[in-house]
Image 1 (tube, helix red, strand yellow):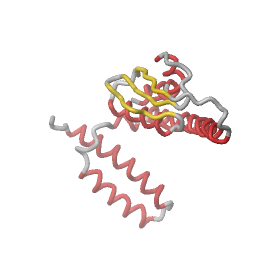
Image 2 (tube, one colour; image 1 turned 90 degrees about the vertical axis):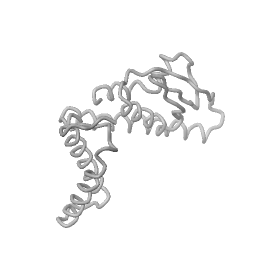
Image 3 (cartoon, rainbow, N blue to C red; image 1 turned 90 degrees about the horizontal axis):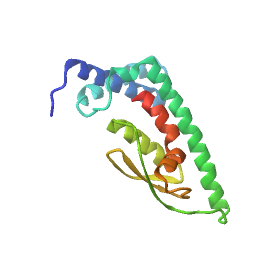
Image 4 (cartoon, helix red, strand yellow; image 1 turned 30 degrees about the vertical axis):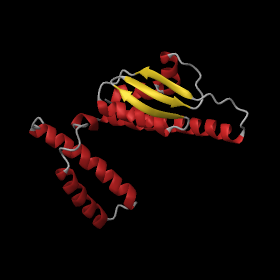
Length: 170
């Protein structure tokens, strides 16, 4: 394993610490001084001990532009999640709706493993689709209602809206 430079270690520590601190604040639901101090210390210790475990991030991820795109991605994901939930709920309530399950594949332009993982998880979290495998740039997706087996059209239906934003983040 390649030794990390000081900048890489610092970048990973800061990104990890900020993320864990935000989680701490979300879970405690308070800005009380004692909670922030305890959370800050605990998340700092965890971040220091886990620098080598987190290989995905550096300080560039905390740039204001990327943070904007992360928030925007959350909105895109939320819209897709609601649409997929409504679609699957309609299928459950009315069994006469067409269900044509199958596996489709498509290629992604994403280059980093971390960005591919975010895309795969986003696809899996939206009801009606499940990421079965990712091999290099090819995604294999189980789809509750296969509308097309053409890889480009399947990509457009399932993942294009996610990938457009992820390319701006990673």
